[in-house]
Length: 244
Image 1 (cartoon, rainbow, N blue to C red):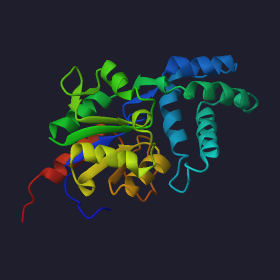
Image 2 (image 1 turned 120 degrees about the horizontal axis):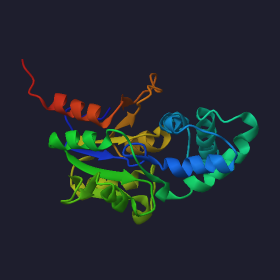
Image 3 (image 1 turned 135 degrees about the vertical axis):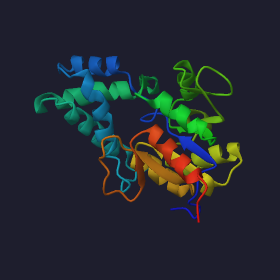
């Protein structure tokens, strides 16, 4: 843990897995093309079970293909696809996930959780591996935007499609820290994929948290929260005056 263990001066947040999940219609369409019948209500769990395959032991920068295959395999398995249809399902899903515009389905409670986090007074920003359009998507969903608007006001959206580096490269985190003008050891980051988000934040000297709504990481060496609201509660608790 970084030396500073009090409340953060700023919280940076991932977009995928924190605010948005893959468009269920497109995902179900991919399964349908693979002649698989999948229930819509399993897709939330499927993402987080698949994201759990990105353990901190993985070097995603040198072995992305195998890491991504692990995600797809776990996703398909979590959707109860029969073994004889899984290869075809992998192929159709991969074509959908190749498009960053897939991530447009708001997570339940994400808007309310972000409002609760903003009400703590902490400064807020987004750090996302995307295509340069994540700021527009989050604003269109009325979740958040830089400056005043229909969503929660935040200070920055650092999108890998714009800055040219991707998590876990620490430079993308440092770009956000520099925009906020704060010390890295006073910043928290919440993501959903350990090999990308936990590893990257640690490299940048930021305190990492993992979104773990299914409690899949009970033995982890990093901190976990089930929701954005829970992270807001932690900020509030650490901000309260200590009694002697």
